[in-house]
Amino acid sequence: MKLYCSANSPYARKVRVAAIELGIISRIEVIDTNARDPNTGLWALNPLAKIPALTTDAGEAIYDSPIICEYLNEAIGDGSLLPAGDGERWRVRTLTALADGVMDAGMAVRLENLRPETERSPAWIEKNLATVARGLDALQEASPLFRGKSPEKPADLASIAAGCCVAWILFRHPEHDWLGSRPGLARWHEDFSSRPSMRDTAPGQPL
Ligand SMILES: N[C@@H](CCC(=O)N[C@@H](CS)C(=O)NCC(=O)O)C(=O)O
Image 1 (cartoon, rainbow, N blue to C red):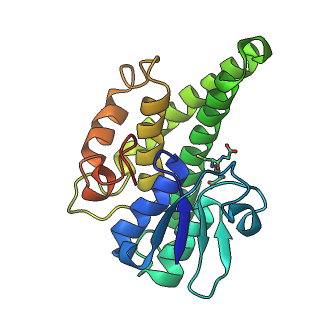
Image 2 (cartoon, rainbow, N blue to C red):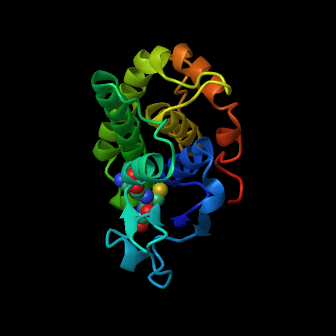
């Protein structure tokens, strides 16, 4: 399998962490990819021109990080990252969507801030920062139930998404004190970040 990704993408990090947790990372060739470069082959795999994208051993393209994570979990790994019981399964998937949505809102702010100052919309930035704040509140509320608090305990797709989400928000939006008023989330994040899979994939280091 080939994984098209970049070192600081939080979506790609989820996939890399999931693969490490499942013990299948050695089966994946990681390809550092600039999603905006038309010559990498990414656009032919993923018409949305986004990373991460995965090609399976059969050469099939799979994209959008939640789908790649579920594919690795179910089709390649042992399924341990998504609980089997009905209620628990939907809870984990919904919390995964929550963390992904916080990343989306944080990404919208980042992209807006990268535009020339005269073209930026303060209202758009404010709306998305408010979404990040509400989402972090909800993640904090859910955090006592997240799996994988200590490295010897198994993680799941929701805790992986939440861990990558919080780390990326802190990395890309350090001007806000996100965790000062959310001590529960801060404690959980510190514990979860000590997992080898999280340490090996922390933003700011090469792939
Ligand atoms: N919903 C997608 C989001 C992926 C995404 O937005 N990736 C960013 C990089 S972190 C990207 O490729 N952006 C393309 C661009 O900025 O042109 C997923 O979960 O995989």
